[in-house]
Amino acid sequence: MSTPQPDRDHQISQRDLRNRSAEIMDGLERGESYAVTRNGHHIGDLIPIRRRRRAVSRAEFAAVSRGMPLLDDRKYREDADRHADDSLFDPYDRAYGRGEFAEEVADDGRERE
Image 1: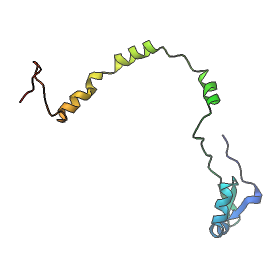
Image 2: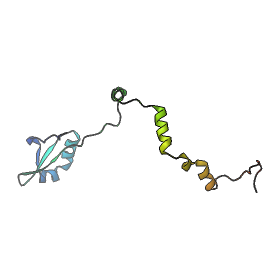
Image 3: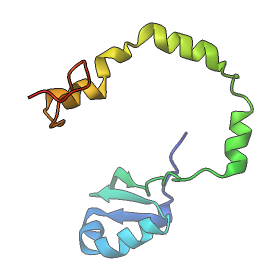
Image 4: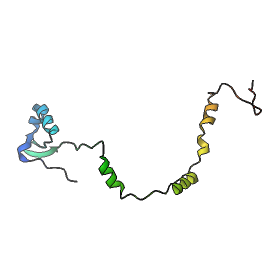
């Protein structure tokens, strides 16, 4: 994607940039671009940033999703089970290790002392 080139109507000198910065920033917010010069030579461009949209409409999402391949849930789960070891992340083991359970129960169901 190419960036818009500032037109010569919005050519500003380094001095203008310093003295009229608030006015120029307001112009940038409105979408205007500026060609900055020093001693009459073009040294750079000030262009507004391209804002990203935060949300996508339901219709756009549906249109993009139509081209996606279908997911086979069973194959996905089999693949996940083959590559992930859930036993490493047992929340009860972590809780017991931190002493979060005040009472421990013996194998016969009675409380340990």
